[in-house]
Image 1 (cartoon, helix red, strand yellow):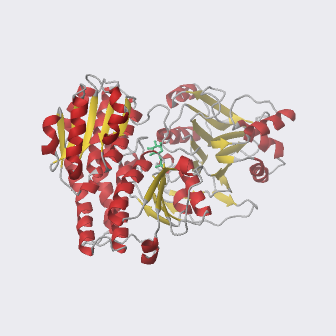
Image 2 (spheres, rainbow, N blue to C red):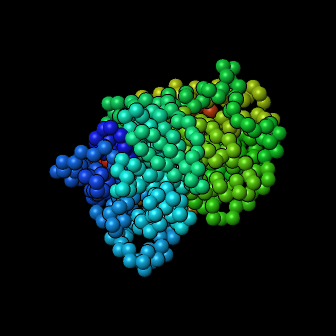
Image 3 (cartoon, helix red, strand yellow):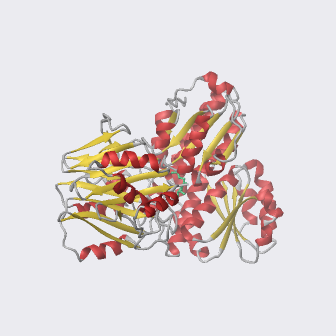
Length: 608
Ligand code: G6P
């Protein structure tokens, strides 16, 4: 959500800013802009629309500059227009500001600044920052920013230029991501690593409430008392290629096919050859034995992983699990007890609601274990314990490999807790771990069904609605399959617990409707057969996804049956989801949708 880039150094800044913004396109945006130094003044070029529109505007200019900031905007306050695009200038043109986040008290600040003669040219919350900095500026921008921070409420990552100091960028953040990259040829700011990866692998995390001064010769980071904060740079350990499409038409397709490798990378460091588990977290067996209740909090697909987790942890470890959407958890006065454990799941580690849920749990004295993909992200840093998913960078907005790797960690957690509490024997635990280790190979078998899934997609790509039904973990995966389909293809889709059909959704079934029935749970296959017959009797076509163990019970009643390899019932979501991802992908591609950047969606939702 909003992308920020900035560069100062020896090179021409504009191509670097534009390249960085392109790498951040996945975050979602509807307008873009840059601010650069041009003969001692700050020049702003911005527009609504895609980066190609900005490029067209820039092509007519002959500016060579070595310092600037860039922005892709995902509109929150004010429509996507040229005026509302970032950067925003102070009235005297001295300061240019790009911002990711929301300034919650912008209305009262706007009123106050208007009273002091400032003129607002946009409807954004961001513009108040440009004017506030100007208002408090007394020759030292860091000092002014320290003052500004005491006046604004909300979340922000900021990149600022000061016309009095060409070649210098000031950056600050609170609850929105921002890093500072460093290289011999110059220094950078960016919302995420892919924006700088073509130039450097070395970067600093700018901490919450810190301010960074970025100059060609170096980076200084200050705390809110204007004291230097000593920091060592971190090094990115993934390659430029891992953030490129590498011959695939879309990042999403590449990331779907990367899942077997991502599972191996995530699981193998945590399991031994003889199928023991070592999660390498600082949690004692006594703590696990005493857990009273587990709360899983997440948003979007990560919340769907939590739904699967509820079934599995309750089944194996016999601990009650509540799975909450983080945006609900934070405001519902949840009942948390001393011996509870909170599990927070997030690919980006920056989702605003998930972070708030984590903080609420910690404020209430409950231990938080997070499952996170982005190393060093805010959620990872603030959790008591972190389990990283080693999925590598995920660029497509619709998550695939992050979901799958999160699932694999949930399986390991469930088995580990179940064994520690004596709910399953040591040999059962080893058998289950062995099943988890076999998932990448079985996943490859599902991915090999591309031609079948492409064929099925070609039959259904022009439908208006598609329904998903399932029971148990199949219901939890149905939620994810339905979300994947709707977010990238814009086909209306609903996922239902199959037993709930009769309580309403069946009214929507008509001649020709497509119902995707997930039937991987042996004990529930007969029940699903009943549900398949119910919808067929009302004219629906049924695509069943079953395993070799359940297909016999349901394939005859279905119009199409896609067969998955056999595996332990509780772990089938890892296989089912891959089939649903490919189905959604090929449908969206057939409809000509912008698969990697669906409209209105953002990869990293850093505002509430
Ligand atoms: C956005 C993304 C989803 C993701 C959700 C939660 O909506 O498009 O793919 O599941 O945010 O993000 P997180 O980074 O916390 O997993």
